[in-house]
Length: 245
Image (cartoon, rainbow, N blue to C red; front, side, top):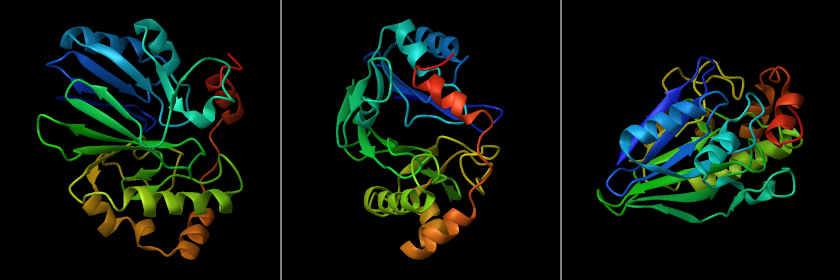
């Protein structure tokens, strides 16, 4: 298995991973302008990009996912709840669905809260063993923080959804899982993000303050710490929906 994390100046983290032996790859949370980097990586590794995935509808930056998918003729994947919003065809991801790319399997976990369409990607390298190796958490769980709750509904409603996603979908997973989020420090998608761009679930259970809170405290503290909204957010969201330039 190969795995690459690509960090941006604004804290954005994109991912490229797959099965080199059988020639399959997955690109996740591609930033506009980075499409050719993924194409070059695929060429160098002798793999075909089989899926391009956005873990949610991004509000802080323009996505390059749809453009990359068109370039390499791969499905562009978003959660099924986006089907009625976007103006272009997508491969609709369903909770529990497994994408098979050679020996590497990616299970979709629907984790609403940061946005209603947020998903996390639970990845297993079956050559190493049957248990998942790492989790791409998008903007659901960061290193030292969690996603902001004001992008898809009232902050209180979304914070409650995020609490349920964390408690029911992520925290029951194995402590040994490596955690790779969609952003690190410098992002406006959450407050208090660490500059370290990876962690383990065990470490986050121990040290992420939001994972220690009961529901009422979580909602109150998360709503109180919402950072300023991303610049030009409405235009970015419209463009990512295919409704603007």
